[in-house]
Length: 71
Picture 1 (tube, rainbow, N blue to C red):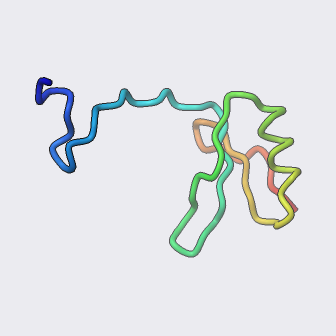
Picture 2 (cartoon, rainbow, N blue to C red):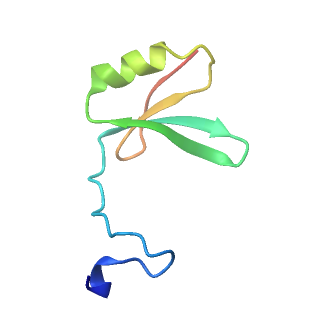
């Protein structure tokens, strides 16, 4: 196999980058915001957010604008 398709560290196969999703759910952890869920479906993101039992999650769009929070 060509070395062009193998990562230098660890010999893992190359995987193409994923496309950026439209909506992200963030958890404001101790080391900064962490993406916990990504999707292109707004209703699915809102349902995922509503199903969380803990408050603090934020739903943001691709540009970073705050759309909703879990209270």
